[in-house]
Length: 462
Ligand code: F0G
Image 1 (cartoon, rainbow, N blue to C red):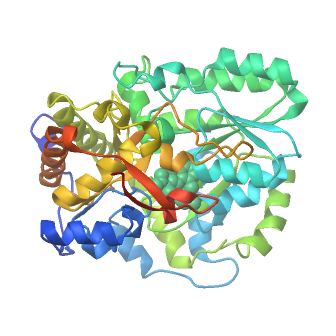
Image 2: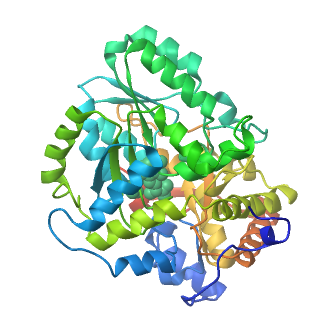
């Protein structure tokens, strides 16, 4: 493990660099206007520090790149697929592995096999594409994250936990036959990259067993979650992260994974099942028409090799210690300047509380989006709104949904930026905060009917 001195810097060094273009403030004002005040519409080369997502944006290691050269591009039975299966078995203890092109590909294949029309899928907090695939399969997505997650100011070690009492009451009310499955998202992205404790996972499993309900994990950030368990949960301080991962997944019967996060690759996803051969056969039949033959699922052999190697690398505890520390480093700087963030910081991003940052801007004028626009103008930083613009409208009443959590997500790609970049980000946020009283809201001028935040166009309110 890192000691005091080695903890002060990245546990890797730079072998290849990608120059960053830096525009003037005037140019940035023009670019964001042309983009309809929507950072998704910016060209990435017009961005200085890109914090839109941690998904598919990781820097691969030399070992992963070396693996890319060993791609076995066979349609069936690629040796990279076999390697990937071995790694999944070794880390998670699961017998069946099915690659997919990314996380939502896994959701699209698995969920229709588990959901009957009108059934509920219970989660701590479902990610947007997960919710969308539950609904496409005829299900209803329900969130049961603990109420402490909505209190951004106060510390709780596991804000991603399920409120298991509330969930159990819901199961009793609706009847277990109306629940398709339970899905634990680790870490809980939508609540701020917040971890779920082992105790909570065990309790969810106990409830699932009691009512005969299936239990799966959304594993996108599994290693970051395991690291938090090691740091914060009694009894796990002396276990390895790998042992903790093995225990976490022993309670579930399968997972979907976006490998674009903790598997440290730019594209890829997985479905893995512990031992349900019958479900595995069904997944195989579904994956062929949807994603590709069962031994590649939409990926090249070289992608599967990079993924297998990434899954092993992400368990390196020096890497994880640095990763979690870097997010905290940025979060601590913001907190020290009085900026309201989800506290404690999560595993992959710092989440600014937009409503507290801009209390004078009504929530239906998208305060968090205003901050994103200003961060781009201030320093060419591209952050993402995870608030009212993203929440969209109630499908029946068409009223705007005003979510309890209205965030700006400063999402940190893995192994990409240094702490000098974190200093720039912190300084930019502080400067925007200093002139917050002068900022005005935004209004929509173009609004697509679904997933509006990606393509929406806005303009400042007069
Ligand atoms: N589950 C979680 C928890 C996610 O965060 C994501 C993606 C997915 C599933 C879907 O995976 O993108 O590979 O299809 N999250 C990204 C983000 C897009 O920016 O948070 P995918």
